[in-house]
Length: 86
Image (cartoon, rainbow, N blue to C red; front, side, top):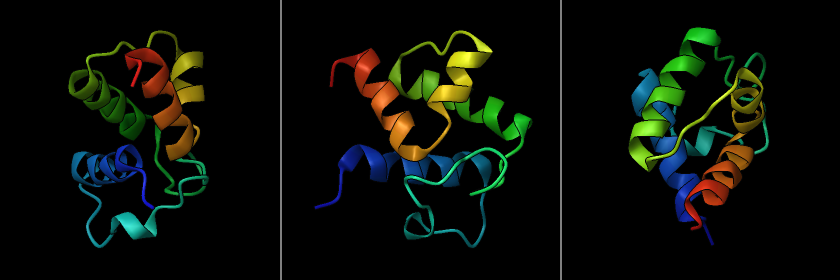
């Protein structure tokens, strides 16, 4: 069964970063988001952080916290769950 938060995050990543030709199924939940994996750069990461903060009403504080949260889709989902209690 698909985790609804994981599915939502994959769609959010694709829409926010305008990843043409990428589908949610193309995104590996365990693959790194920055560098390898989706090969996002620091600007992409910043855009994603801003969107996630708005979408989920959470704050991603330090660059270390951001790096940890954005290490994969799974880690991002865990970060959001921890902050929102969902």
